[in-house]
Length: 240
Image (cartoon, rainbow, N blue to C red; front, top):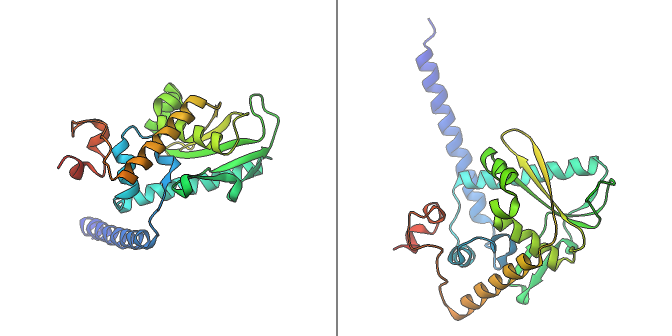
């Protein structure tokens, strides 16, 4: 008679062993990657200035699961870019035209792509910025319900900065969100928001000046159970 309990036990043991090996390889690769020496535009919209500062100067090594989620985003981004090209869009990625540097290279950003041409669609003008994210069902639904600026202000700030520094202010950006739970794709048109761009730029200057002066910027809350603090990688050190 087949011992199903033994088979299940062996399968679980094999599963655990495989994941241990995979996670070890992921972390080994992550440790070999060079540390970022500049403040990135993708982080500047976070509500907590101290987290922005410490993510830059005192980064914590993400765990293997976080690394997998990060690379999942890259995979979806590459896949979606191919879909756009197949659909007749002239989407260009990489190269100097998709990146900017400010403050002697201490503040930099690199957008996901720029549309130079494409199908005639009401509301879309070329050239325009492209940004892409891969999110789970809950985050996807929140953005659908509340809009990008309210639901994820850090993404809105990132878009505004890229539009400003890359000279893509005339036409709305195309902000693509892949729902990794359902496969749905949402494309938001994001007009240039000069106030958001200025605010994000000012925050970058604030972080750079504090770093130069050796100052620690204030945290978003004095309550370690505040939702932004509860899951922050700097929580233990910040509230020590």
